[in-house]
Length: 204
Ligand SMILES: Cc1cc2nc3c(=O)[nH]c(=O)nc-3n(C[C@H](O)[C@H](O)[C@H](O)COP(=O)(O)O)c2cc1C
Image (cartoon, rainbow, N blue to C red):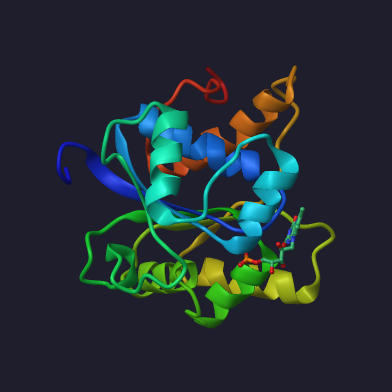
């Protein structure tokens, strides 16, 4: 436990299509009593504005307040960090340990993480997760995939990260877009070992 919550989970939203996956993930993590550390890239803000009616400010304190209100989180349960906040706990291996999910993950961030670029806090936090052997989950959304994308996914998988493309299945007969979003979010929670009731496990 960190403070009054369970171990924090870092959620980075980058500029791939699928902003709703990331927003729903944050919401569900809050409901699961997790502390959530949020980073949202500039491009992700554009995608959020394009794909949803959710209005999120850029400044970290105001962003945190907006997400706390949106998710019904308790004060302090969501913390947000700026693009170059190198003092954030996720920026160093000596910071509090947390699993990290990049959702959605642009191919740009995927490639930067695979190369260890660390040019912004999202890339640095992912680099820290890899070097500290912490859980790192990337949810790319792109199609078709070039050899560059596939090579970076292979490199990251070999480094211990989990690459899970935002590719919802249809065998649960989704009746709405929300069902398809929850399909992906449920898979992420399964990876994180967080119990949920978003959809039944296969075979139950
Ligand atoms: C509406 C919109 C949709 C986009 N969709 C994708 C996408 O599905 N996959 C992707 O890799 N990039 C997509 N992009 C491009 C990325 O946002 C762009 O490459 C950006 O530089 C990524 O930056 P970031 O990784 O720092 O967020 C999209 C951009 C916009 C504005």
